[in-house]
Length: 338
Image 1 (cartoon, rainbow, N blue to C red):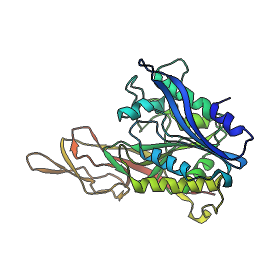
Image 2: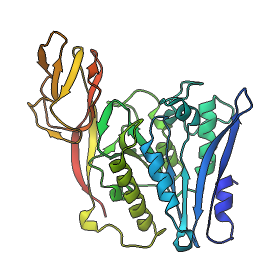
Image 3: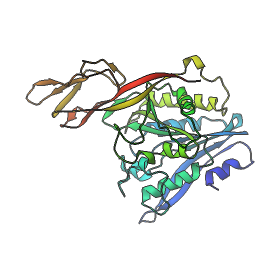
Image 4: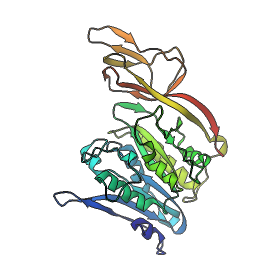
């Protein structure tokens, strides 16, 4: 039985614990482990699992999840909360997105491989703990450090999962994301790679309700985005029956579901000067900003051919041809959540 699941299932009353899941070792003999915090309620119930960091520069979710766990009183809980603050400790220590020892994108590596590269072993160790224990898992992310973004969610639809899209939408609702992006697992219009290897998608395959919560920018401490996450964790825990309280009123539970999104890239190098902000709705015919070249000339970014919502907007002004300027939602609808 998994280490965390074994501890949660013991009939030993309300408690909290923390520890390290063993994965391997470095040449120096230093252990490679995954830290965890688990809070067991006074009465049995569902388990909310917060996974704080798949990519090494995604910090806001780590802070929010750990602070939420610190504030829990197991005596008043029905069910459990588990926090695994980092799934990628090598990348965290190196302050970079990917594990420097194999350069894999960990969020395209699940469910992992017990005999594979170190990222695959980290993925396997985590999935071994999650399966059969978590009822709802939040895969916490940020955009990369070059972009600003308002909190939003990303989810997949797994054709073989018993978890429905409606259940995932309901779990996302307490976070009031400005967009809820339905990601194409085939990768069309999205980042290249093995999208089906994402932690949340593999959780869906195991019957666990799961989604990604994107909390602003990487490599930064952003109090407002952290507060959004903490408030959402509390609301979801109430919705799951783990904490006492009144769930979010149904009338307030609507989400803007995005079904197509993509990038605007720079046609020429220079300094990107935005005329918009992350989260803005930009109408067709408007531009998101200008390119200021080093000869002092100014070139407007090509106007949008259709309306778009800015999911993320570049805050680092130094750009070269082909670099990303904005992540844009191109198609969306409004969904009521029961």
